[in-house]
Every structure is written in structure tokens, then in C-alpha cells.
Amino acid sequence: MSQHREMQVFLAVAQARSLAAAARTLQLSQATVMRTIASLEQRLDCTLLLRGPRGVGLSPAGARFADSCQRILQRLDEAEQSVTGLHASPAGQLTLALPLLMTHQVLAPIAVDYLAAFPEVSLATLAREELPRLLEEGIDLALVVGHLPSSSGFAVPLGQVRPLICAAPAYLQRWGRPASPDALAAHRTIATSSTGHAGEWRFADRVVKLAPQLTCSTPQASIRAALAGFGLTRCLSYEAHHELQAGQLLAVLEDFAAPALPVQLYYREGRRAAARVRSFLDFAVPRLRAHSAFQV
Picture 1 (tube, rainbow, N blue to C red):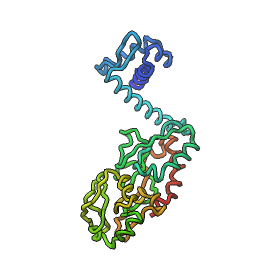
Picture 2 (spheres, one colour):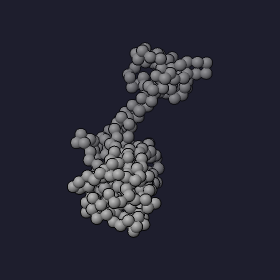
Picture 3 (spheres, one colour):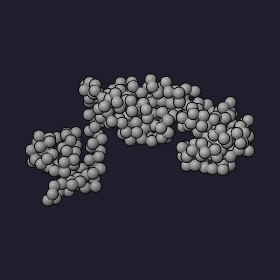
Picture 4 (tube, helix red, strand yellow):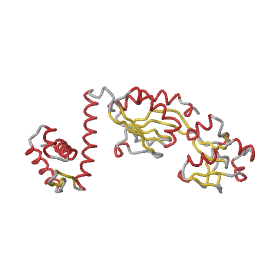
């Protein structure tokens, strides 16, 4: 029996927790299922199933192997269906990785409309600030801010975002607008430790060292503090898009800003990608490109 079939048999037993139930599902004899599991355990030199009076359970190694089998068989099924054209109808779970604030500021209404148009698809989002490993993490697409390595898979450009310094109007009315990056020394600043640059802010032609009065662990916390009028904070334009559009935050030092960063949808397999991936690209890319958060 092939390794592929062995994994199918083992996964059926693992999910049913019964040799007899798995045999009925697979339309095999119970003896064949038992021989297959025994052969698999012998080849792997590992106990996968724990047999008891109430059925079968999984050993720790069996539980890990079942998870691996499920991922492998799902990927094989998707690959075969995309080649043979059986994946013409988008269905299944679409996993999308993107920065946390991108979901709130940009994606949510687009995702809702996409799911209404493709009801057989379910969407799972994962918060990733860095470039994810698509294959290893089981991710279909990633919305990435920044430049991709040349060895990356397929990428669809969406637009750009820019680094900016911003503050609430009430703070600027009280403390004034800084005329240059050097003037930040006379202002209260809010730093973000998760960016790795809490003690300095980078501009187009210089790096300014800071002694921040407040350091937050996340960009959203820093933006909240800025909204409360505490001081100036540095973020990417999309991270405070709604607040900037509403005038709750105002950008300063724009003439000194660091270069804009590209925003891209990154995925694997190109035209061979599963229908749910292709359908999301076709539906979301025009809407994302038109979004004002990516118009710099």
C-alpha cells in the first residue's frame, strides 16, 4: 500500500477513533485497516494508536502524525484539484496573514463583501508583522508591508504606505508643531517597543535619538496615547488611517519623512493556486488598490 493511502487510512482511524468506523468510511475490511496500521507502525518503528475497550486513542506521536497527515493530504488534494480543474468553484478555508492593524483599518469590509460573494469559503486571518513562511505555516496569502526577498513567491503590488509622525490637534495646539526633526527634543514623544526602534526615529536624511516619555509595546497602544493628546508618535500611515482621515490625528514633519514602503499580496503557486486563492485575488486586489490607505 502506498504511503499516501497509508496516511488516508491512519487519518480516518484517528478521526473516527474506531477501526470499524474507519473501515466503513473507507469501504475496506476491518482486517485491511488493521494490517495497514500495523504495517505503518512497524515501518515508522513507533506506536501510533492506543487500543482499549472503548475503541482506539492516539499516542502523543500518533497525534502529531495525524496533524501532519491532515495537512499533507489537504495540500495534495488541493494540488490535484487545481491541475485537473476540479477546483473551479471556490470553497474551503482561506488563511490570510497580515499586520494586525491592517485588518481593522483596511481589510474588514472587503473581507465581509468577499465572503458574501463566495459563501462556500471561510476566512481565517493571522496577525503577522513580519514576512510569514507560507508553506510551513499553512498560509494561503499574506498582505506584506515592505520589500520582499527576491526568492519569494508570487506578489501582487497594491500601493504604498509611508512612515509618519502624528499627534492629536489638542496636543499640537498646546505644544506647537515641530519645525524639524531636531525640534523633537522639546516635545513629548510616544515610542513603540515592538518595532525595535523605540529609542530613535528614522527620517529621510537622518536618525533622531529620543528620550520618550512613554513607550508602548504595540503601535495600537501608541496611537491610542496620541489620540488622548499625550504626545507625538511614529507609525505607518495605514496604522492610523481612520484617525488621520477623521482629523483626530494630524501628520507633522512630512517634508522630512522616510521613503514610502510597498504593500503587496504574497502567495504561492501562481496560476495553479487553489480557486479560493484566485477568487480572493480577483475580488480583493482592485478594491485594495483603490483604498485610500494605499494612496501615497
